[in-house]
Length: 449
Image 1 (cartoon, rainbow, N blue to C red):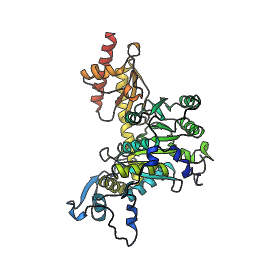
Image 2: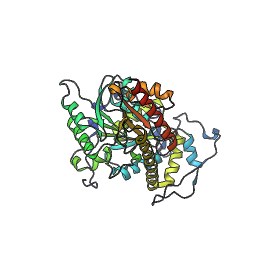
Image 3: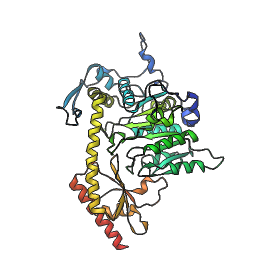
Image 4: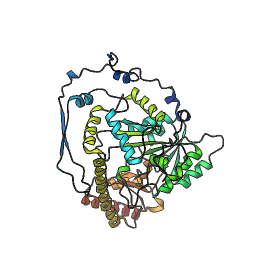
């Protein structure tokens, strides 16, 4: 690792316009929200925004309890802690707020990125809060891609982004992935064999930890080569990382792309600013709160904020205030202890599921053990290669078990024998029964062929 005390060189602002879509470059600013920061000017009397008068709001306080984070030794925390929003905190929670998130929450998350990824202010990046990482992903895709553009996607890919790329009629270039994450052999071959005269893709989309659907986590060597290829072939990395805090693999974990472009020795001497990182609290605090955050080059984050300002104005103030109240009470150390407890919980869930896989699907399926996330990705050994879609949607469903056929994770929708199964909710008994039913389904299909 290089010396992280020396500030890196950042790519200049004028580097980014070629990466922005026509929509992003021509989007008009919100006439009201672009002026809102001026309300903080000392002595100003603002007649600007149509904010409702808070005296008309019927809420006088919000109180909730939350678990204390585990202790340093990993034991359960103390008794639940009681937290209340009132006064100025409640007033801010009930009112319109900044487009990119409440300033205290943004500051807390910026410090988290420093603590976890070693990135500090003044390196050309900024952070913005959104209504879940899916909200931010959709806006980033619109900000970076024009209709018909080619985009590199780790494949199999998160099913939720396929419609986003498809709606822009993007040419989704599938980069193979395996148990070690995205294949740099595949990525290099695509880029080096790219047709002359055709613009190369400006963006790579990847999920480096516990990839959805494969559960694969990219190795350190793979990440280093991806960063090298990004510099060689001039593309940005969309690092979608909702499972970063659900890593439970053995051995030392690889750093994020966001951290690596700052600190890894292989990146020494290169400017930072090719990574647009997406985080989420959905898997670690609450899915229903709909809070995610994007971190990356300021010009790109500003383009996302400009979309928010004209689409949904801001992420919900109340859920931000609830999250901030809890996170401030825990502190960064407490938050990280909590995430380690969550990871341990899902490690146990994985082990239960894999044991049931061994009992019921050994010889009938092939899989690699996930190192992070909530999913098993396995290939059913069906006659003639097989198609899992028919089996999952009809025969398996009729026997009382439901999963996702692998075809929904392939941009071109081709047939595949792969299946994605989520192990996050079912009890050990339910897992055993579900995989028993799946075994019976596979045996019946094989017998009928």
